[in-house]
Amino acid sequence: MKQTILEAKGLCKSFANNGLQNHVLDHVDIEIYEGDFTVIMGSSGSGKSTLLYCLSGMDHVTSGSVKYRGAELTRLREKEMAVYRQREFGFVFQQVHLVSNLTLFENVVVPGFLNKEKRTEQIRERACDLLAQVNVTEAKDRLPAQVSGGEAQRAAIARALIGEPGLLFADEPTGALNRKNTEDVLALLTAFHVGGQSILMVTHDIHVALRAGRILYLDDGVIRGELTLPPFAEDEIKSREKQISAWLSSMDW
Ligand SMILES: Nc1ncnc2c1ncn2[C@@H]1O[C@H](COP(=O)(O)OP(=O)(O)OP(=O)(O)O)[C@@H](O)[C@H]1O
Ligand SMILES: [Mg+2]
Image (cartoon, rainbow, N blue to C red; front, top):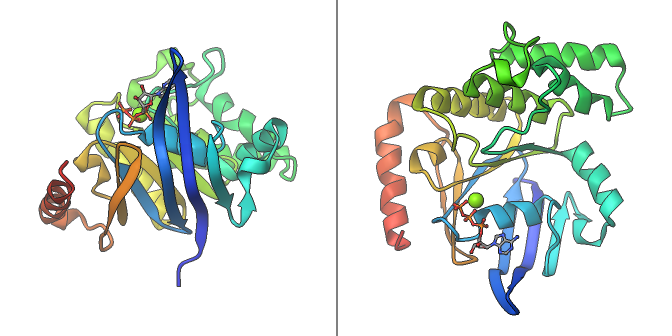
C-alpha cells in the first residue's frame, strides 16, 4: 500500500485580470504517492505550472487544501512556508536559476548550508557526490556563464537535491535543452527516482513523460484522468509512447 506524500482537495486558483476572474484551477483533487515518479500533462495554458506552484507553496491557493505528509500547507504563514520549502522540497525549472557570480559547486553547496542539522564537511561531500552523479565534476569550479545549458541544468538538479528533499518538483526541466541534454536530464531524474526520490514533474511532451509511472491529465484546470504504467524500461520506449499517445487521444488531447 503506497503512502500519500502530497494531497490536494478542492484546490482552486483564480487570477484577477482587468477586473475579471480567470479561474485557472477548478476544484482539483490530487494525490501523489511516496517514491513515485508522477507527471502532470496538459496543453499550454491548462494550468500545469500554476498547479505545481500551488502544490509546493510557491503560490497562494484561492481555496482548498494542500497537505504534505499530513501537514496542512495552506495554513502556514509566508516565513513558515519558506522554511518548509527549503527543508522538504527541491525545485527544477525550465530556465536554470543559478546564481551568476557563484561557481556550480558554490551554487549547490550554499542551499545545503541552510540545513542546520548537517555539518559543513558533510554538505561539501554531498555536493561533490551529487555533482559527480550529474556528471559536472570537471565544470564544477566554473561560473554558470562558462558552462553549457546541459551542464547548468544538471548542476541545478544537484542543487535541488542537496537538502535531501522529500519531494522534487520539476516544471518542464528539459524545455530549454537540446535532444541529447534532454535525454541526459531524463536519465538522471529516472536514476534518482530508482534510488527512492519522489518526483512530481510537469510537461506537455510525451517523450519527457515516458519515464513516469503515473501520468495525470490536466485540462482547463481540471484533472480529467490518470494513467498508471509499469516500471520504465529502455527497450519498451516505442510501445510505451504508443500507449500514452492513445490514452491522451482518449482525453481529447
Ligand atoms: N500570475 C498570473 N496572473 C494572471 N494570469 C496568470 C498568471 N499565471 C498564470 N496565469 C494564467 O493561468 C493560465 C494557466 O497558466 P499556466 O502557466 O499554469 O499554464 P501551463 O499549463 O503551465 O502552460 P505552459 O505549458 O505554456 O507552461 C493561463 O491562462 C495564464 O495566462
Ligand atoms: Mg507552464
